[in-house]
Length: 157
Image 1 (cartoon, helix red, strand yellow):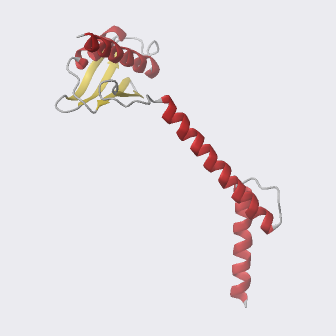
Image 2: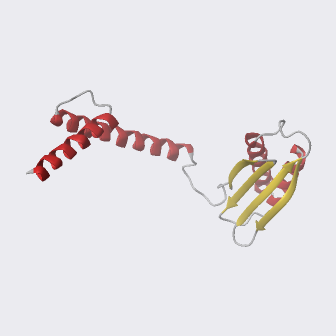
Image 3: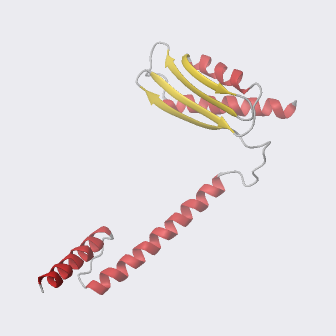
């Protein structure tokens, strides 16, 4: 009968962990399970709300002409790793981005660019002089501004 006692002890341990994870004030097993169930429902509602927030923050009309490239910037030891991606070809965008790098005083040390069916730029840049004066957010904002300017100039053409 020792096996049955071990199973009960293990079940009690798991219920205790469940109560701890869900911050349940209960000690009653049934109450812990009910509280955990409510906690799971709250988490589902949070996820739904976050998904809703994400979908409303993106343009509701996903039109190929209006979708701007995705930009990510990571800080490296002496510079930044900048990634720009668009599902469509973007003639002239590379020049706009490189001009933005120049304005920030970034020197390109390595880059991979693809401009065939889509546009992809992976660049490693180093700051000339003080790295403290430029951060990843500034680089991202500058690249996004260059993309918006490029996009607006293409709409006028």
